[in-house]
Length: 431
View 1 (tube, rainbow, N blue to C red):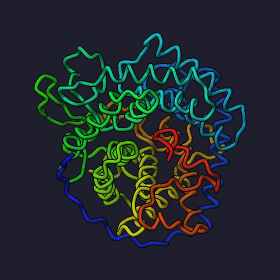
View 2 (view 1 turned 90 degrees about the horizontal axis):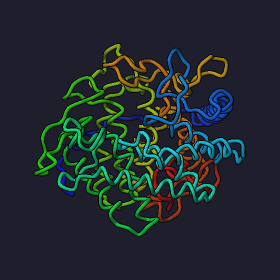
View 3 (view 1 turned 180 degrees about the horizontal axis):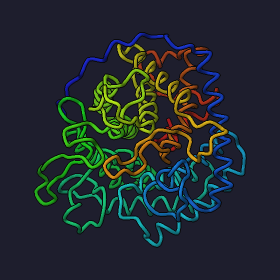
């Protein structure tokens, strides 16, 4: 893979400005608040699922449809992994049966988000509890996702029927987060087709979705007959030539997840360039506007994009040598963003709000989910305090092993346990 992308110099970042002890206390409080919210939502949701975003602070309840239902199931698995409490496992396993019915009947599966849907629900069930039906559902979903791969264009079609000419050849930056399902399927079955498609898609996204200045298109169209590139535009960003914040954050995290499976080191370098572009366009409180082109305006923030970026930055830190010149700055920024989210954006226990993270933006142009909570922000926030706290514990109490001096590729401890960062375990193979 050869991609020519500018390495924008990272803005000056003063290190060690955070009160680490205070941040640890805030992360512990955030973790407690997240678990309380999950408990309340379990009682309200029952066997149904939250919609994509809140309306006036409350999630409308739905059946297992659309692309976001697994973010709730992912929260349940994270809660189970953190606490060991079987009430979370039981609730998640009820969800798993619903996902099994969805994929066996092929209900609402014409989407690349099968990766999100089944990695967070059924692959997690298999990894955490050895649930064999969940493994089977996940492999069925991987087959359905592979059907969306167009070998001429080298991409996975994002949305819609495969015969829809308006959707043919469209890939979007979000899809990088769906690729772990394919990598996992190759590991489970020994069939290289899944991983080959994932690697090719990641390479095409790197080549065409990422612009030369390290910003990203939301969506890009390829010719499905000739394989030639056509054009990029946006679906949820401010303009075709702007940079949608959540897409940039998905890009940072997603390219690193591909690296975790493929070992293609260029993905790490690309993630660094995307991270620099993102960090250089953050406002004073370090939580991005919904589009990075809107810095300096009073446009709404997207806290969900910030939570995704935290996870991506912590993943980046874990993949860089300790002597990398920018590694400490990425770590500092991840913790600063996390501190701002937990202090200024996390819903309080006494607020009549179903969501965890306030002030997100789902789709500005349609007015959907503007300044509301969203389900993916809840999942990423659920994992972020643990990931950030683990990095913090590493800084405060852990001497680096000799191999970490050269390359910090092992997951840091999760609350000083040996389970690793739970979000990494949900999205990527464990080392």
